[in-house]
Structure formats: structure tokens, C-alpha cells
Image (tube, rainbow, N blue to C red; front, side):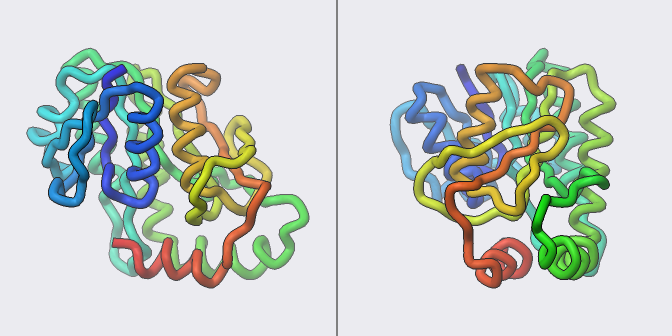
Length: 230
């Protein structure tokens, strides 16, 4: 399968690209910084701003599926990356007849998501970090979800919990809408997307993804995901 990965040189996009190539897929790695991608068989680098309709159109042409691993950092200002890129991606896919889309969102997009037994997270971290510091970012994720839901594509909204780095894929879990857990390793997130690409268990709905085998350093996770992210 020929897959376009948007945000290919981002933290999750790198996992997606490596795992997809290892699985035998052809990957069109869409990025604004192509020099950071190592050349190898099966990989085609495409330079594009994901909010630029013309550039997105060129990157999507000739692919079988689109996987969006785009991400922004927390900001007091309005965030528009998610919704603007969703509009450009879905328009290009409709023009080229590409039906399958998987886009990373967040468990926060589910208003009923409250992990079981996570008292400190539910009552301290979530209100402070997600609902306050990440308010504008998550608001745009919800707009992105609305854009995607309004299309006729075979879409899946992929909702991880708190993202962190782990070098290998673990025994992760998926669930409809959102998953009952606090953390998601990026390697697991990528693996779940590629598996869903093949199995199609969550077409035109949301898929929650959580990691249970390992846990991150919470302070480091907040810094990397909310503050340091470029």
C-alpha cells in the first residue's frame, strides 16, 4: 500500500514511517523539513505545508491512504493547524479518490473520558494541563474532528491518551471512542494505526489507544508534549 504520512518527521510520524516501511508499505513522507529524513527504499519525501491546499494535493495524489500525525504545542493563542490541515487533506483526498484517512486527535476530544482510578490525573493534571494549558490546542482538535466527520471518507479518529516515548511496541489496547487509560506510547500509537489500516475495525468512528505495560515520567511528558514540542 502507498501511504502518505503527514508530519512524518514529528515524534509520532517517525514511528509511523519506520513501522510502515518495515511492514512493506511505500511511504510518502510529507514534511516541511525533508533534509531530516534518511533516504531508503520505499520512502519518498514530499515537501508540503499541511495547511497549503496545493502542496497537500500534490502529496496526496497517487496514494492509497493518508495518515495524519500532525501536532502543535500548547499556546495561549488560537491553534488552527489541526482544522486547517484537515480541510486541505480531506479536499485533496476527495479530488483524487483516496478514501482511507486516519488522523491523530486526543482522548480529550471525548467529553466523557475519565480514566478509572486516576484520581491525581482526573482532578489535578487534566484540569490544569489539558483543560487550561492545552485549551486552544484541544479546541482545534475538536474542530478537526468535526471537519473529518463531515466528509464521505472512510475515516478513523485516533485518540491516544498522554503521549510519551518508548522504543518498542508493547501490548497496547484499543477501544471505541476513547480508551480507559492515562498514557499512550508513540510506538504503540503508530502500530495501532497501521493495524487499523489493515483491519478496518473503527471505520467512521473514533479509536482510543492506551499503553498499559510501561509508564512515563509525567513531568518530562508534559514538558516534551506541551511546551518543548516544535
